[in-house]
Length: 112
Image 1 (cartoon, rainbow, N blue to C red):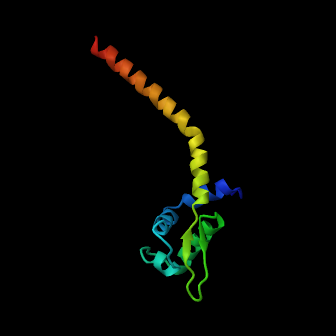
Image 2: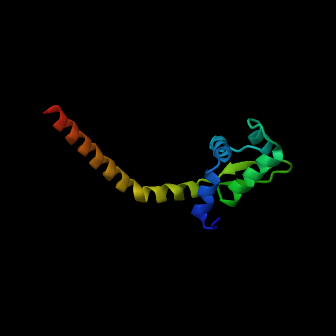
Image 3: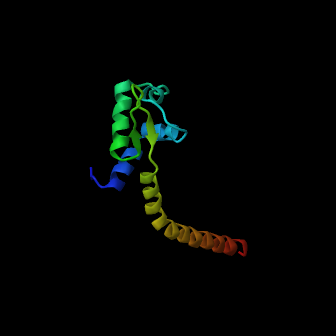
């Protein structure tokens, strides 16, 4: 796997468990135990998911005595948004042309 930030982010987002963890953290900080609650997996497995998210820069883990809250870091997601945005105009233009062509074809079939 490539070590560039965008590749790390996409690799981290490829797993549904990690996406659920990020969705949970979008609502605020949580401990590993809190994040593990809804999953039918060991605490160790959840910790491995958190390490992938942390390596991608999607989360950080703080330290407050015994409490180690995890928090969402939006910068990598913003980078994904910028990357996708570069292609959005092309996709929208193609969909517009397809829509126009479908209307043209439909109009021709209505006149037959």
